[in-house]
Each structure stands twice: as C-alpha cells, then as structure tokens.
Amino acid sequence: MNDPGLRVRAGFVGFGEVNTPREFIDARCGAAADELRRRGVELVETAPVSDDPAGRQAQRAVAELSEEDFDALVVCVAGWIPTWAVIRVIESFRHRPILLWGLSGWRGEGRWITTADQAGTTALRAPMEEQGFNFKYLVNFKDGASRCDEAAAYLRAASAAARLRRALIGMSGYRDMRLFGTLYDGNLLKRKIGVEIEHFDLLEIDRMIRELPDTEPEALAAEIRKKWDFAREPRPGTVENSVRLALALERKIRERNYEAFSFCDVDGVKKLLKFAPAGALTLLHDRLDIPTVPENDSYGVTTALIMKHLTGITPAYLEFYEFTRSTALMGVPDYVPPAVVDGRVTVMPNAFGAFGEGLLNVSRMREGTVTLVRLAQSGGELVMHAVRGEARRPEPWEEAGWAPPAPQLPSLEIDFGAPSEEFLQKVMSQHYIISYGDQLELIRDYCAIAGLRFIP
Image 1: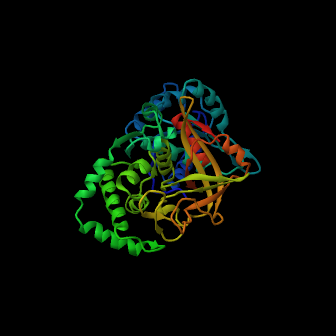
Image 2: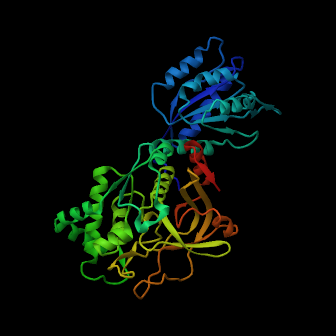
Image 3: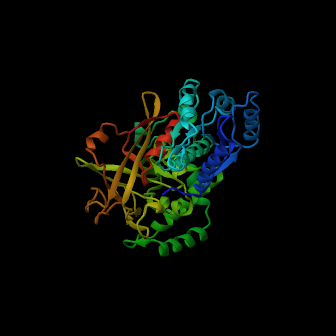
C-alpha cells in the first residue's frame, strides 16, 4: 500500500578496510545502492571510504556528501573497518538519522567468503549509541536475502520525519464538546514532531460561504449528484449547504497550505450552521487529498498526517462502538475518504438528534489487513500506540438517534488476533487512525527517529 511516488532522499557511503581488495568493497556497496534506487530512494552518493592513515578518504566523503541535502545517511559496511574512519565521516551528519547497514559475504567454489562485515558493524554499534547518534542497526544474514526492503522503509520514515518538521495543520475552533482528549501541548508537538497547529474561527468560514457566487455551488452540486450514489432524495438545500461549506473550507486550506485539517463539529458547524458537515468533508476529500479528523482532535489529525507521509495514502479515522473478546466494532457517524471506500461513494440525507439534515457518508469500507495507530500524550511525553488487525464487514447494526430509517455507518469489525483486553488496557482515545496494510515496522522506525515511545 505504500506510494512509490513519495520522495525519499538519503546520503550513501560505503566502508571497507584499506587492505581489503577494493573491488570487493566497491561492487557490493554499488549493488546495495542500486537495490535502494530500485525501491524509489534517491541517493546522494560518495565513493567508499577506507582507513587510510591520513584520513583523506573520510575527508573527501564529508565534502562530497555536504554538497547536497538529504534526510538520512546510509552507512554501508562492506568489510572490517576501524571505527575511527566511520566516526570521522558521520560526525558531520549526527543531526540526521543514520542507517548502520552491514552487508554479508558470498559463496565461492565450495566455500563461504567474507570480508568481516559484521566485525565492522559490531565494533560500531555501541560507540554510536554512547555518542548519541540516532541510528538503526541492520545486518544482512549469511545465506539470507538482502534486507533492502527494511533499509528502504527506514529511509522512507526518515524522509517522512523531515517533511513533518515543516508541516502546518489547520483547525477551526478548539476543544469540541469540551473533550479533554483533544487538548494538546503545542511546544511538545513542535519539538518532537515538528508540526504546528494553526487555529481560526468558524466565523471566517461563514463569511466565505456568504461570499461565494451562486453559480459555483450550483454547478458542483449537479456534479456530485452524478458522481455519488444517494440512498434517498435530500431535502431542498441539503446538497447546496454541503457544497458551500466544502468550497469555503477548501479556499482556507489552499490559502494557508494546510497539510491536514480538523474542525469543531458538534459545538461548531452543527450548532452554529445548523447542519451536519459530513457531506462537505466527503466533497473536500474528493477535491483535496489531505487527512482530516473532526472534533478538534489535535493528536488524531497529527497521527493521520504522519501516516499520510509514511505511506503516501490518506488514512481514515474511526471510533470505537463495541468490543467482543477479540474484536472491535469501529465506525464513523459522518465521513470517510475515498481511499478507503469499496466501490462508489454513497451518501444518505439524514439528521441526528436536534441537528439539521446533512449528507451522511454511508459508503462501504474496504476489508483486509489494517494498522490502528494513535499519537497521544502520556505522562508528559508523546507516545505512539499501534496494533495490527484484520478488518471485515460487520453484521448489520445502527447507532440509536438517527432519523429512521437509521443508516448503516461506514464501519469495520477489527479482529486483533489476540484478546481485546490487551488493547483496551492501552487505548488512548475514542478515535484511532486506520491505515491499510501492516505498517507496524514503518511506525516503529518513525518513532525511533522522532524520539517517541512506541507502545505495541
């Protein structure tokens, strides 16, 4: 499910001892670099370094790598190398994540041939840890497949972490329904993730709605009537309300270059604009491929943005409704992005409680392996909780309170493959982000790079 179009950029430098035949070092480092390129990694490369007594090769490597920018450095150890030669190179790049990657030998005529790659890596691991480098240690196993996929995944996580340092999230309002779980520490979020959340008032959106010319919403309303399936005919004005809100939100998001968005739902749009915003957010996802989570869920929308940068695919948020001993019923009473929809987008005009009619997204969700993930604050630090599950279509169910006939909400039954009690004792919120595929190792790598405690 990972998007190969995501830009991943890394520096690459190989190492091998001065007395090892150079052709062995060059060829194997070159092959490892080619494997990374085949996996979509752009490399800023310098020739392999040996431990020449004057340190000229290390000096040359630092100069060449410093000419261009990259998000992580691959230290490819292709043979024994005295530690000082490696440290002399990587010291200049200690502010970046480092992949310490030891290659493996090869089979000759009736024998195994090695250049003592893992003598080099095992001599490096502890000193790098003691000196405070942020690194992942990876070795190819004798007679095993190259671990290029794992290496590329780590570099993907490093590039995602670099992009997140510059990310801006838009949020209309603050602390919907006075929920404590939506509060956040802006300084902590900026320090650990790099994300900044910018708040604005719903009044600004209301004014943008009033300024829209009639022709634009009318044309778009006619377009979505063809594009979406309607479970029944909406009341006059229901579609147009959703279109106008979507266009106003889109204008604000584009103006400020927000990479993700959250908003005050119950105490904001529904209370003040008098209709449910699900149709507007469904349309917004059609027009802008950015993560959104309602109810001013600060850490939830940040989680969604992290997963978008890690996988290249906009995830969905779901909330918990019921648990069995090994599964969770998860759904949303509003909208899901098209990336998680199985078939065409389907909407149902409906109202909940005292709120006016809106276009509720009732699309069927895709099944398969999923990763549930949530960024949260615990004990004054940011943590990431993530588990893998198998998603299937749940039995027919309804949430009490919707105008009859009650909708079948977008939902999944998630099988944890273990007692749900294990998950429940660690659960961080009613909202979790759903990313398709097994993304646990990618999330672990990101947490290590960002300095977050990972909770399995």
